[in-house]
Length: 193
Image (cartoon, rainbow, N blue to C red; front, side, top):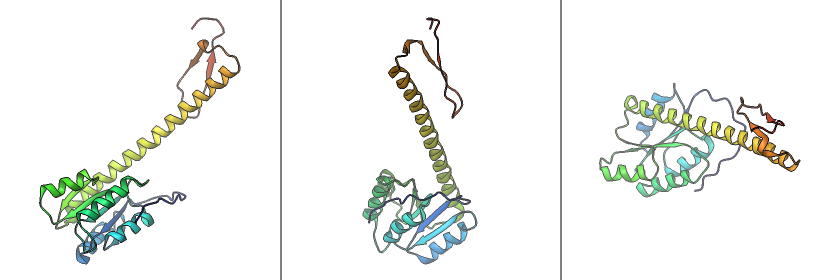
């Protein structure tokens, strides 16, 4: 399966989105019941469903069981790799009954946000999910601010290029950083810089 984001108009989001991919129906339903009040939830029972849910729901966090009948570590690492190579910024928390440190390190190095040893206690898992959502919110805010800063710099660069094309002596150009949306360029005709 391949992950492709389909551009859509962003809808006002009231709850963070948490997707749960777990083959054990009782564990999956227990997590959904525990998280439903706080998060918009979606659930599937295998890796194929996880890919589908990522595209349909675009969750903030995916709780992904490591060992399901449809796959294990290899499929988990493939999903993490596909996610990293996509436009999605979903954070993955891997749920596993494997207590080996080597397995945990393998999936963390593969791109998982965290590794949680089952049984999946919602009261213990909730702060991890909330921390992941907060991290994602900060990353998204930073990305927006970087884009705004880049656009602001590009506007100033365009203005300077226009002035240069018009024969203005650029040694006399001074640039001020002003609030967003305001761009001013002063040309000092006195000959002093």
